[in-house]
Length: 453
Image (cartoon, rainbow, N blue to C red; front, side, top):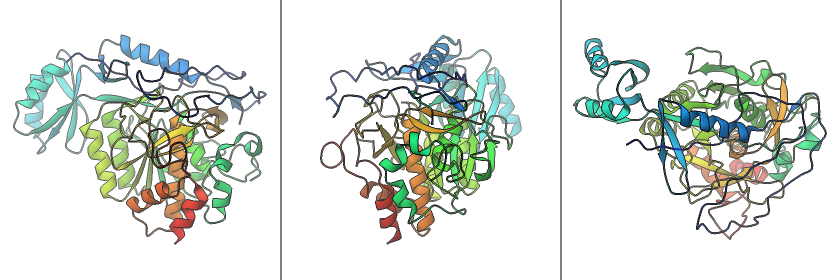
């Protein structure tokens, strides 16, 4: 089973250049797929440089990272189709779910049998790493044990971000750069609700710049899954950008305005400085967020391979009445991506500033709605601001809307919140639900009006 796989376009490891915009590459549309509507992509002139605004060529960095993963001796790909959509996993690691927790002595026997050791645990799921055996060899061993429920690879997840950089109430970058909030009627929505402090939002990502002046007052206790501590500082920038779309403090005279004014942010660091993490780490982050009171969770990450470990965490969150939102991916493919394709999750595609379908955005029956995704100005690591593009940027708009809905009407269940978001969307493309726009572009004002009733 030495197949190989592809993940989403990643951000650079915080390589910042104070330069004009870099060119945006676009993947070829899926072979034999129907042409998407309004194919002409949005483009804009490069904006003047600003001393606190960074321009990143994260698409090129993501391709370099994928090449680095492909060349790694312990990483394998799974190819999903002839087009080349792929996912990655560690060839010398395995995730094992036990029906009952093994004793210490039994655990030592397992480690000896695979010539390896236990490296992580989330409830009944254990991740083992072998010094000599492959995943396939370990799988045959663990499948022979009656106490094992299932085995699967330790999949790698990366952020859904592309890059088309430009610089970024009374926030200094709002009027000039933040086309995204007026496009979804956010300002009108603020007349109904600006959020509440008792509706926290968790961001499972690369962490957050914990001292960013536009975010620091909005952060509550977070978690670093990778280091197992309470310091989820962002070494990449992606998580900080996602957080700013949701919660960069509006009307403070600096930077950008987030969609919510009061909802606190839980930063959960499950992706490393290079912008990727494993299924077990993402699952652990989801469970931590649920157990610590998150009402909404944003997942701007994914790949094309379903994971039982991740699916269990998604179902755990759904059973605890948490709203889950995920990016659909940036490969212009109809290949189902996860976690976005799980039925418990609101899957989000991206549109351009002219509200045309963004050519990088994945499409298919699993896409529920679209949101602004191209040239989105937000906070960035190092007390800076950046404009990035991708479904990673679209998803937090929907996450923030879910938080506003739960703020104006806390009695609504997660399913009711989802229904309101879909029902209130502005229909785009073909009449009704379609594979490119889903039910349409989110409408903040209309959704809050429905929620208030």
